[in-house]
Length: 276
Image 1 (cartoon, rainbow, N blue to C red):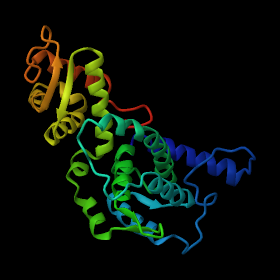
Image 2: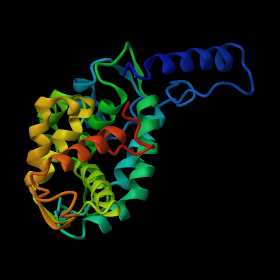
Image 3: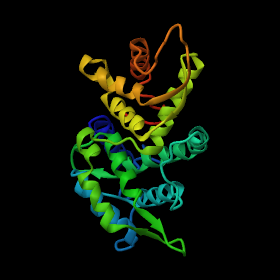
Image 4: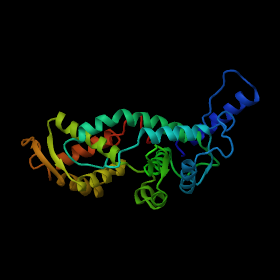
């Protein structure tokens, strides 16, 4: 978490000095303070103990948590809970689904921000903030609710996080819902600019899309151009500007446009998603 670790350490030191040493009425707030947000020993729910066990195996610099961590994590799990049949679907309802999820995602990111900074780290973590958030999201995906709405964890599945290839390779993941959202942004831009209209896509399309998003600025490297071309080839086009972009599935100018837009928008990352 080299991107914000020093800032958090400064906040912690200032809070401790102003609040607990000098006793100022108005002092720096520290979401990770174990005194202000003390957890009664032995009061942690079982579902949180399972979360913490896995989280510490991935984020090695983790030291301790507080009441903020538990409360906000529970809020996040409840907020993002899905029905058992709510699966990743690639169809023309994608846009509607993405729009419906925007408000939930925004609130979820706010909760995740608090969770990350509520945790104390003994030294600089092995993941940046975006990576820590990815780990939290991945663990939370394995929580379910029983008939009485009690929170349970799928213990066998949750261990699989430790070997997640995407997390190990890139140090963060792009979840399916987030991948959908970013694709819709690209799709709407292509239509607005009267470049192409997409008819439908496949799992292969989204696999290539995720790959080029993970490239970040290296997408400009010539050796990565073929991956963008493969992305184009795996799209079924409904309409395209025949004068500017004939045969869009192989058109080099369209390749340049896509690459340029991804670089310009930093992979269609929203402002509330701190992925620096």
